[in-house]
Length: 184
Image 1 (cartoon, rainbow, N blue to C red):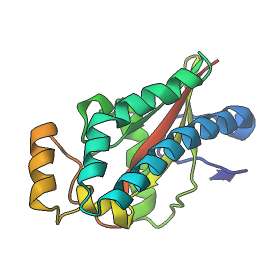
Image 2: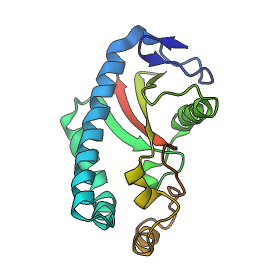
Image 3: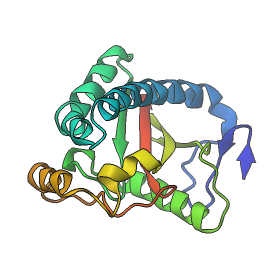
Image 4: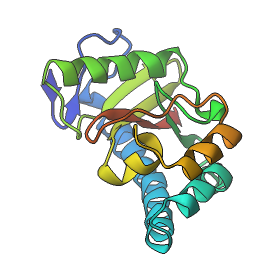
């Protein structure tokens, strides 16, 4: 069901907000774009500097978490932003039950061809609203998240993320979400 720009995913629980709280959605998307912009710009620089993906891997394993903390330090006290996925790489990004429910609903919409990458989901839980933006796997992501990862990158992944789940993707696959959490 589409209400304004908010797409409500039918399989989610009744705690989901309807488009009546468009301000929360707008605020959440703003924070999501802040984090996404920082991550993308840094990854582009690293990929341009080293087409093997090694510098990007070093950035992700060493600085992406700190960059997320830096972005969060710029947000109001009532808000934070983070990344998660069903197939996560960093255990610090492990999804909770609500994240899993939203992501499974996105996967279902992709399977039934009812998905748009612009689908934003807002979920209310107590005094907190979560704003979810889906991420799809781009061609450049496949160097580290695909099925044909170079031996050097694979060795680094095995060392840094021994329980890595975030490989085997194809271009266009659902990769995960960026989540903004906003307390009322």
